[in-house]
Image 1 (tube, rainbow, N blue to C red):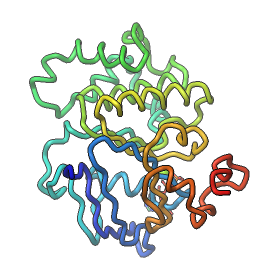
Image 2 (tube, protein in one colour; image 1 turned 90 degrees about the horizontal axis):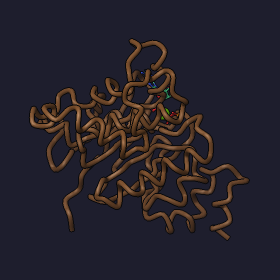
Image 3 (cartoon, rainbow, N blue to C red; image 1 turned 90 degrees about the vertical axis):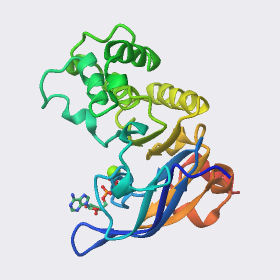
Length: 246
Ligand SMILES: Nc1ncnc2c1ncn2[C@@H]1O[C@H](COP(=O)(O)OP(=O)(O)OP(=O)(O)O)[C@@H](O)[C@H]1O
Ligand SMILES: [Mg+2]
């Protein structure tokens, strides 16, 4: 069996007294495309921040590519798109699309940074935004901005991508295109963990599903998830996926 890309082992976390994550264990393997779902406030964003080293759990262990997080240094192997990142667009400097994507090369190896221009332009092309480099980010639509932030995460050519609700506020067609792009990147070898509430869309694209509600309620192959009545409570009653459970 291949070595895991991410290993979360019995992680518990609290911002203050309240326990937000309790004994969560989750492993992602190369080539996984996993949706992390769960109600608002269930700890999804917190878990992602722990996985990318922004928060430190009080209990448990996290490894990236077989290394303890405290010893992990190869951050260029990781891509991360935080939740509501597009909300920052109007508040920060009037960055162009090119500049925003180039930010993703900060801290990457010099060999990558030397090829900055080519890498940024090639990545924009990859996400369907060829020709947008000189445009001001704030003049793009919400869906286009989401793809710019995806490009920013991809520009360093990571091996694993953590996405926190990257398609919020984007219309159905744009969501479909975004997921198709992720599917293509996954087929090219990228491991993906995506937090989402768009189960109807994600359903057609992901390979695994993980359900979080302070504890990890379920983690398994997508087909298994569709047949598991115990996790019905996770989904809105009128969701078409419910049909899979009959
Ligand atoms: N910086 C913080 N300080 C204190 N409490 C926090 C902080 N960030 C999140 N929380 C709390 O931790 C809990 C989990 O939050 P988290 O953002 O991980 O949930 P989530 O599953 O991502 O929710 P959503 O679907 O709404 O994005 C919530 O109760 C939230 O209020
Ligand atoms: Mg969240």
